[in-house]
Length: 190
Image 1 (cartoon, one colour):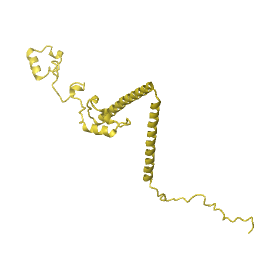
Image 2 (cartoon, rainbow, N blue to C red; image 1 turned 180 degrees about the horizontal axis):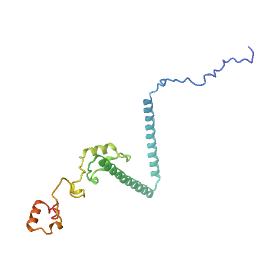
Image 3 (cartoon, rainbow, N blue to C red; image 1 turned 120 degrees about the vertical axis):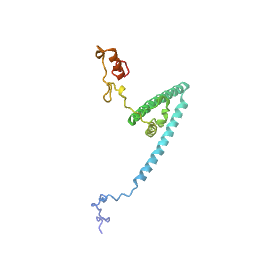
């Protein structure tokens, strides 16, 4: 052999890409298990971050003066109070919307513990709202004939007389008209 000869076998340049499986069945990974694994990693890291944030908060509190601590406490209290009020407004709106959709009448919302309709993050618990609304009975929202504001409704009734109709009538005719119901509107009975 000469020194110029290469003893390595020639590289296979035709197979630079792995073979492609056109049938789509070559992937044997359990994607659900893979997703659960990564969810577990995520939860683990979220817990670690939460602990680190608490530790940083504790270190900040340890280095604060009394005035700074009082200010921080007041700020936290204000934020939690504002958040509580905002959550209550959102819960009330959700309850009203759900009640209107189902055609039920809500009890006095100020008497309810609205906190039970929200989770720890302040999100409305739709299941709790739906469960509560399902316990309420439907309301008849149809107005009666007098409430419609369109006058007398219903079948053919007794013709009502006006003051002009009474002109020229005798006492006897007016008494008969009253008994027959022709004067109910004038007498305020309708």
